[in-house]
Image (cartoon, rainbow over all chains, first blue to last red; front, side, top):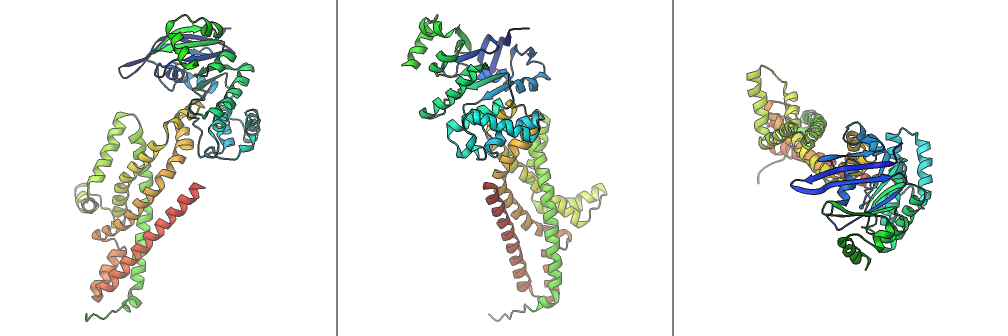
Length: 244
Length: 219
């Protein structure tokens, strides 16, 4: 059995003439938490979006749980195993909180309604927001919406969860409530890829930190080394800016 | 002003007007249903990323936006009939013209409504494993409908009024019935006043319905 649940092999991605991912390779082990950081426009969000096929590759390959994303029939299977949480939450505004969570399990996993509702409530309890189950997303705070979005991803019982700057559009006092949920998830052994600038979170739970710049991975290190003894000057410079 | 009003003509002719009103409602309602279907279909072609389908839908939209309804009705009923040998009955011809033209208008309304739904909604839905069809039906379209309803209601009001144009090919709808009654009684003011009021009442009804729908959607 292959240890690496995700293998990214020399991928390149262009937006028109712009090379946004330049020969990126990365391996991620099961139950590991990988934090990806870097200045805006470095390609970190695009990298996540390539993993579940929201963006197509121009070259290279991604293998998730032994399935290549290049094979068309795998795309949906990969998406079912790969949860994604967005910066802008992207909850469905015309559905209640509970409906947001159970719609996909019912439609895409064929779970029956009552069972799905039970699962949904359990997840809402886990992200500490059960009392809002019948409300619409617009009546929730940003932090609450993001926690619902995490529950929605988890409802699919994914093998991997991806987070694309999950706290970047939150008010400061709400960041913690979302990070707490993510930390708990990491401690439960979920494989996670997190694009974030929350270095406190990275220090606490990351197994690996990846630094990107201009579409390339410029440093890949375990957290202690990454923070205390970065290999690249660029990393030092970046850290000095975001940690100050 | 020497004119004496003779609204008592309606004692004899109200059944004519009622029949015309019925046909106006009938062709408008059927045309609206067809226009909704055509509009949805054309807008989906327009939004597909397949070049040839986009081209077809754009041609359709430009064609029907450009041709005056009056010209289209006469062209189809007299011109096309002569060339193709297909003789539409007037009501069918009227319905075809109204629904094809307004279907083109509706396609643009739909397109704008669908595109107004945030891109993140598609992405979230895809990420959860929904197919493109399920995403459209369950996630995108229900949100687009809210945006689409007000301009669609406006368009329906326009279509109801446009339906008077099919009188030119002999459909006995409200306008034509008034014309005939007028020619028999020489009472244009009485008949056309009542006809105008009826159109106003019908459009008022439509806009009230739209407002009701909009309110219900909000809650």
